[in-house]
Image (cartoon, rainbow, N blue to C red; front, side, top):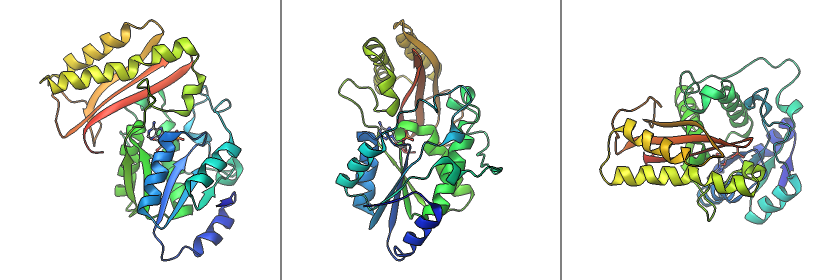
Length: 281
Ligand code: AMP
């Protein structure tokens, strides 16, 4: 496995991959089985797999956790090597954003709803870094987790709108045995908070079973999920939303083939998100 920290160096190596199908998995490191599931899928579907490890500063707001975001490159490196990754791109911030950086990508409207309401510049940072990484890596396919459903929807739309010609594959959410979706941020949770956090997948499971039992009125389902979350005292609700899977606009009635049910909570200082979909992103 090769590790490249410089854009020019990566471009040089990329030349030798001409004619091969290249799969790409962007990450912020501190890898877990969720990341590894994307990597396994890329390895299965491509000739070469490139993984980036880059904690992207432009997707963090001024009061967010950029400085304390967990990092352990040595551990990541071992996991990636054992998994069979071919090439790792791990630039630093200076390499990605020069001192006079000015250009951003905005996927209008989609970045302002759901998580975008409380994180107004987050998806601008995500779209920008993903486009930059796509331009450097030039993959044929790229792999994203449904865990960050809004991110996946936005990246798909950016690819379509800007004619990038990259296949975006969205992979299922990998969960811990207690139901909590794996996330690098779960390590911030102490024991009590971790227990409280289980209310998030629990409440979404309830929503799913209500839908399966025939409920279609989104307002009623949202009220049930909210009520379920409110039972846990450590949980502060960010949002509970039921939206169209493509334009992220609120739905009145469940569409069995095109619905995203998403929620965000805060437990202590940790923000957690989760969702399920009816249909495919
Ligand atoms: P991150 O390092 O948090 O930026 O995540 C990198 C990629 O891994 C994103 O496409 C995430 O959606 C995906 N990912 C993170 N957690 C999970 C999970 N629990 N299951 C599946 N994919 C995930």
